[in-house]
Image (cartoon, rainbow, N blue to C red; front, side, top):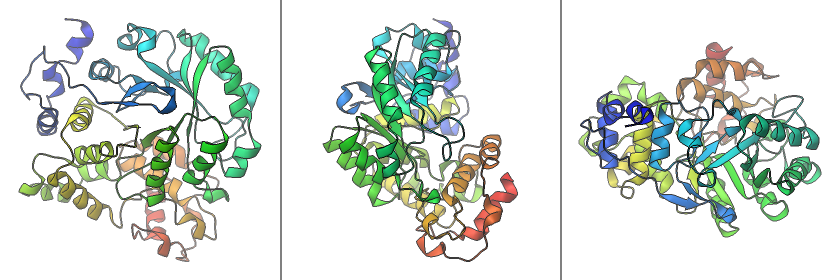
Length: 403
């Protein structure tokens, strides 16, 4: 048995008990230790018009080195933010495969600022990719992705540098496909993600898109997924686990799970099955911190269709999230007279409570030009919030945690 396989034996995967046992049941795998057990294989979907066949769960360069061999064995073959790896840190489990069997994504950010204020610069983006390829020694990146995306439809019309850099790199055989990770920008007078993506679908050569999507999200997101499918553009959901991490730490919520109608599922598993049930959605990107989370996600992704117990769990989670967890729809932002980036602030709150990454949340919050203290408590935003969150009170709470 290889060192990687020893690192990821079944007894390691299941060692934390209840969560692991539930995940094993979802995957149809025994909870008992079995070093020879093969992991469940992820379903595969076509990555839009690229023709790539990718595992339904995408991987990421920030996954721990212990999870990655197991992920490869389960069929994870698309790696987000692969530019973070160099020739020495590219995981052996990936490196030893034929290069054409896995797909590496290079994420490119704006330069000279942050995602709200930086600029698109053709030459700098072009040179960035060339430098990363030289360091990584992988020959090419399969996907060149514009991180955070355009501020508005007008921005997409006027600033073509990202596309031009891609076309130069593609001509040289250094990248193959163009993708975008799109945020909402109504806090700075811009447009919503789906408005920008709809424009790009008809006017720019983007092959794949990534965007916020979770249970209870706005209908416009679902409409974009359907439109993208018709246009053969790949769709990847991110920020999918709204409230799941927070609920896992809440003793009152955990006590509710003793009800027999929730047995055999978990909030995370139900969310994964709900996402996978959308046949027009290409894949999901789910933050994964440990073996149990990975096994639970894979188990749900390969399980049978969404069941009544899963729907009951989603309803329970939605009720729990009401008044508490922002779904990042950004409907409130347009109503704020102080132009506070409310959804960004609440996204950082999600990092702290759902991902348990307090340091990251504080770091992101510290970069805001106008933070939660700019709120004057006027209440103009409240009617727009589908989650019925007391936004002024929540902003104060988040500032006390992150400020």
